Amino acid sequence: MHPLGSPYVRDQLAQRAGRVNEMRLVPEGELVLYLMQSTQRIHENWALRYATLEADRLNRPLLILQELDCDDEHASDRTHVFALQGAQDVARAAAAAGYAFRFILKRRRNERSRALDRAIARACIVVTDACPTGGVAERTARLAATAPCRVVAVDSVGVVPAAMLPREEYAARTIRPKLAKLRDISLEPVADRPPRRELPLSLLASLEIDALDLTRADVAREAARCEIDHDVPPVAIRGGTYAGRARLERFVETGLQNYSERRVDPTDPDGSSRLSPWLRYGHISAAEVARAVLAGAPAAEAESFLDEMIVWRELSLNFCLHNPAHATLAALPAWVHRSMAEHEGDERDAIYTREELAAAATDEPLWNAGQRELLATGQMHNAVRMLWGKSVLLWTDRYADALSHLIWLNDHYALDGRDPNSYANILWCFGKFDRPFATRPVWGTIRPMSLERARGKFDVGAYVSRWSGEPELDLASA
Image 1: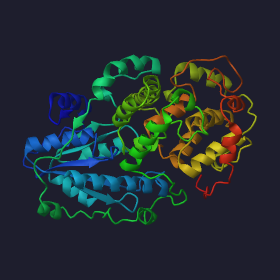
Image 2 (image 1 turned 135 degrees about the horizontal axis):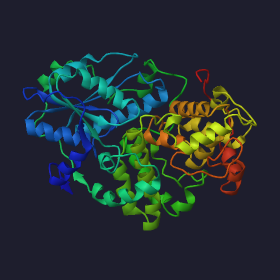
Image 3 (image 1 turned 135 degrees about the vertical axis):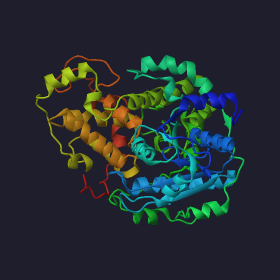
Image 4 (image 1 turned 180 degrees about the horizontal axis):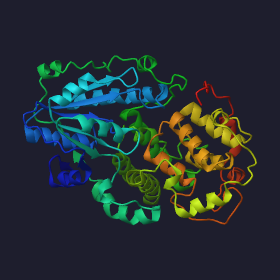
């Protein structure tokens, strides 16, 4: 295991860390500030490692500050409760390991954080997370534009440092061999530790941080007091590192036997990892997942899973980092645009509004079951999710409307929404990362998928029966 500060760690950070502004480091500052955004954990956190090394180099204490605001249009009780549960685990882990951590819950939209302003004003350097989605890059840019000191963003999203893949990759086949050369060295573990200097209580008190006491907080009640969408309720799965690790342990023990066959069956509760919510919030590290799988599964099944988790996840991150149009049809290859232009006017068998889709009110029982699973759990099995996404292409007058509906539905109800994987997977439904197929009405040369053909792949009746109830949500906001 590599100690913090070893050549290995410094080489990794050289690839993962990037300056966001041109301000100088302020040596007379009183602390190093780590603003936690997308990597909501203490372990396996490259931004925290960078901040710790800077604190030691400058002989300053470190403060970890995390904020949860109400500004995202899809912020809801569902997303807030999951994030707050994660913050409770961060607070517990930080206290146990000896880090100074404070959490600020903003209750109104566009609420300015005076405590953050005070901390930045007294910082030598601000370190934060690098992520191209979920509003992280935009918040970081706003912070960097006004900060009086250097701001550095550090990539902890992927297993492999994103900078090692400096251009947009166009398919799994192009990125797979590159990742294969970098994967094992990127998975080498690091011994984390807190900085050498503790944060004085007097300095912490002078920052006047109105922090939420996460040890006593009723997270559902706290979310209910925020200016967010209260029509999307919390779900049964718990956010946070401990719940994510429990799910990982169960999957390694029970789900990786015959994974390559079981992963396509949505009626098998352990046939797929279902780890995407915890990965999206950074509650658990993709590297930790990969190491657990390699250590606990048969080699062939481990590689099958890692091809899904690492290759496609890193491809998604690469896509969103290098293609600013990643949430639009403009991100699609030229052959898709030609196909859409030729088939935009094709007659559709059915047209559904966003409200009808949100309410699972189509004439297709399997599609409705997938949407109800999403409404009830914040998740949808990948095998159904592909059919769910592909079907909407057939049910709108315009391809742009289909994309808009899918992004809205996913971001609004899925716990892994607003994530690189989400945008890449939805764009895949339109032909991204794919090749042309034989021409068909409406589909054009985009890969077709049939709800009917799913009956030969898994027990559709059992899945539909499981999710046959009416969704218990107020869907007026759709």
